[in-house]
Length: 194
Image (cartoon, rainbow, N blue to C red; front, side, top):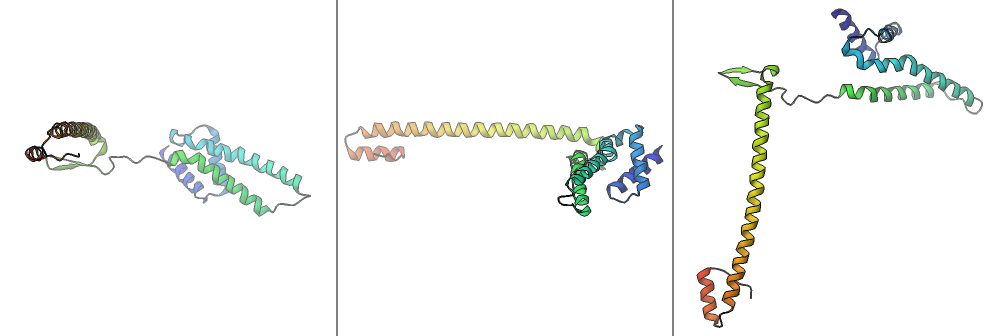
């Protein structure tokens, strides 16, 4: 069974690389039509169903259209082949894109050293790495909250400081003697805008 699966996987890879013969392609169509597929090959079934029937229908309908248009302007076989090939490639791209796009493992290449021994088996160390990641994210969140609180406190301090300065300047401004006002400003070490 494993050898059959390996053979089918190799045949699939050759098919998508355009290296299979007609007989091999028929073998693939028969496999996907049989319904006796290994679970990991099931995502390819819609592609082969399309190649088996949908593509033939497209070619047939395209042939009917070209027969209807033939008296006006006969399309070249090459043009039709290019058009069908492009349509098939675009369809395959959209059908296979979700299967080919995989997110990289964020822990790929990670390891831990425990008692002087390097451990890089991801299945063994994944729980510990995830715990460390969660701890780091919580610390980052805590740091962000402290930073925000510090900025808010600093803004509040600046506002209070400006209000106190304005109050002092208002009081100093009430003194009629300029020399006394200057002396008080020097003692308080503030500059008033008046």
